[in-house]
Image (cartoon, rainbow, N blue to C red; front, side, top):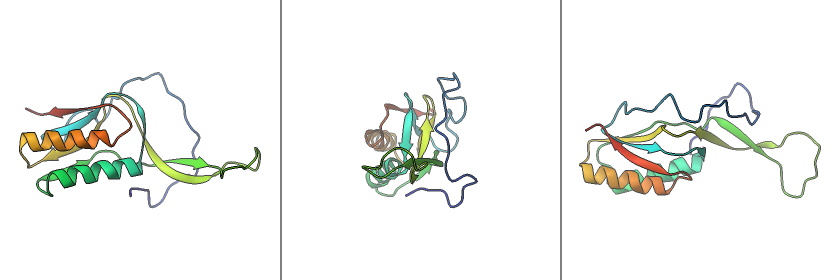
Length: 137
């Protein structure tokens, strides 16, 4: 699974929305001919990214090339069950990538159009957000 090798700060604060409801970066296809674009916002964790990657790889039968355009680097902490308040912030449990509408998550190239679209559609089912398949053509 994806997780950072080294981080500057081990625990982050949750963060708040800065009023921008749609993504401004990573919204266009850069590498492949077909891509999977988010249409709503959520935190996508490393397990979900890996499940989507495996779905694309399996359906394309390892043909063509795939790019993962997101990387989970935001640490999410969690305290053990049945622990009372106090005692500080919990340990890092997993890493997520905060996705906003418009972000391209995956790109595919080197396979037929129908295969690429079906593979990306199946990958979208593994993610906690609504997505759409986009193409350069």
